[in-house]
Image (cartoon, rainbow, N blue to C red; front, side, top):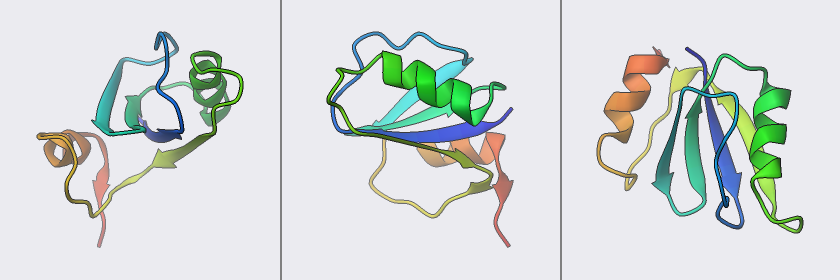
Length: 85
């Protein structure tokens, strides 16, 4: 299932949207598992934020290099993304 990474400048109030799972991994960072389009995920997250909050959403196709994220994040991503070469 596709994964998206969302960065928000303010925490969402009620994360309801077209996804199977959301996973907070660091302050302001969420991983979202969803079969919905990028646009649908972006707008659903946007509607959960205050009007003046900044937001970036991008697909995650390959397991990224990371450190310092919530425990289990790398395993969660590996199970849902391709490994980079």
